[in-house]
Each structure stands twice: as C-alpha cells, then as structure tokens.
Figure 1 (cartoon, protein in one colour):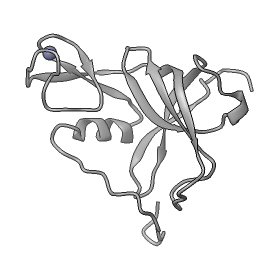
Figure 2: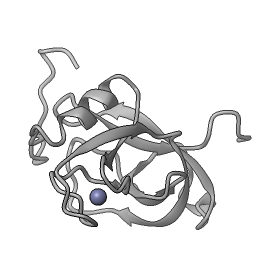
Figure 3: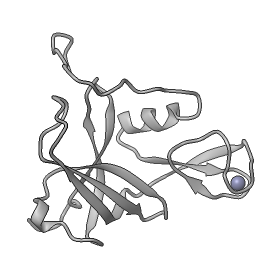
Figure 4: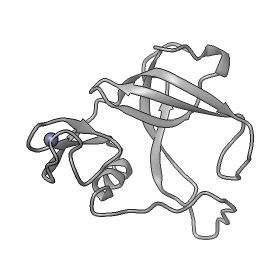
Length: 143
Ligand SMILES: [Zn+2]
C-alpha cells in the first residue's frame, strides 16, 4: 500500500507484542508459524505468553504446511467496512498440524463451500497494510 492511499476503516490497528511479533513477521515473509510449548510441545494459536497445558513460559515455533480443511464458516453482510469486500466469507479451519485458525475466504463461491473441503492458507494485505492470512483453494486444485 503506498503512502498516498487513504484507508477509511474502523478496523483497529494490530497490537504487536513480544509474544506475537514472530507471527506477524513470518506472515510478512509468507510463512505461517505456530507457537509451540518448548516443554510439553503442545501447539497453540493465537500466540500467548503461557502454555495452557503446563504453564511453561518457554516456547519456540514450527512452520505450518498451510494445508487445512474447512471446519465452519459464516457470511457477513453488515456492518460494512471499506477494508473488506461484501458479502465477506470468514472461515474457521483445522490446520494439518491440529490447531484452528480464522481468516476470510477468497476465490471460492459461497455455494461451493463444504465442511471438510480442503483449503490453503495464503496471505494478503489488510486494512493498514498488515499482511494477514487468507483462505484459498489449494494450489494445483481444479476450478
Ligand atoms: Zn506446555
């Protein structure tokens, strides 16, 4: 997004902390990273400072394959914000690694959506120039 672009959006800016900065940095580089407890190795998303399983503060990350299946979705019509196209389809997916992620779905007609269908996490520029996940058909799939 160039500096002359005027964004009229009610979407709040990201709150980047030392616990989630890795995630946004990876997204800018086209990678989906998942936080992993360094002690019990349970994955968690969204990023958080403490493991919900063992209360450890130690963590590292693993890179997701970005392959996922559609668990649920909703179609938003209102309220409208200039940062999105409407109707806006938002999906909840099960990542191959076993955690869930919420993101908007692009390039799939609403009447083609089926629970369990294969999708892939890509990335797109969002309201304030951030790079965030967006769900799409897997590369190499038909139609
Ligand atoms: Zn743990």
